[in-house]
Length: 84
Image (spheres, rainbow, N blue to C red):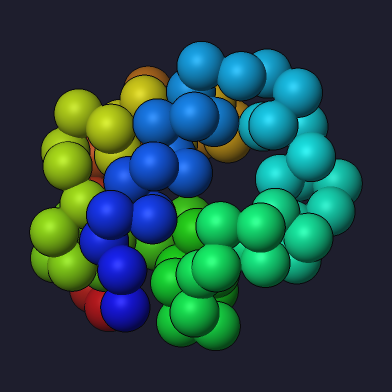
């Protein structure tokens, strides 16, 4: 697992709307470009924010990335408190 690559993807998604759209329309291609493992890709695809946080993803980057991927401000704490 590469926390660096997950952080990088989420950071870039929060800054690049086209990348965020690609992540929604063709996530597998984006995951390959960032060389994410199947486990990392699954966590991002299913918005398993608590898991990403436990793996060491920067909390600020996680919040910004989640918002860019359509997680609402109200939904964010719920996803962070979901059991794994």
